[in-house]
Image (cartoon, rainbow, N blue to C red; front, top):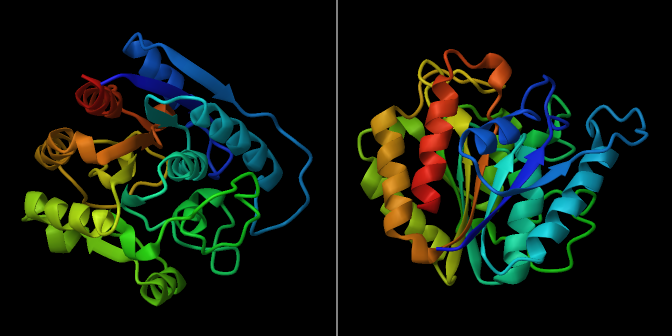
Length: 276
């Protein structure tokens, strides 16, 4: 499989520094040839629920246009999860019949009215499903993901208003506590839902889906989560079904919070398996 890797070097979507360093550290550790895409700080209005929106939009437009240029299997290395707005929308622009699987402790399905923090890494899935207006996707002239073909896999920290929004939009939420004893069968169900009426899937893997005891190098850790055996099952399943996968994100590695490079090792193992 021929792949092209894009480094989205940013922490604009979160309230702590560090994820801007993650992609370069991962790619340099693996000696990967990548397209580095760095952010530019633009003037921002003081809008509490849209923090860094101008700078994020400017970066995402660059990521989006770069991914559209390639016909190869694209991998986005984030940066915070706001970068997946660009990668997911570029993917569905190229492959119209596309579902999405969001492997994450969080739902990322807030909008500008429900967000508690105003940090844009909490709204990308809602945005690519067309449920957050067009302020973060003005550069995209194409389809959005159908929420019925959107799956959140491994959720364990959702806001109350976010839950209401997910239920209203009929997004498929696989809670960690419900799937932890049956990961492979749950993945089969997730793929089936995402592929219903579609040809392929965009997969976005947030490292905070993993237990922070094992993977401390993330910005917003949540208790419990996937263990290393679970991660191996997930990645092997993706590899076994790679013909149905259109594109892949690996996001939210924060080296400033890592310990003994535990999370870096996990991230590089995931990436090796995807691209080998």
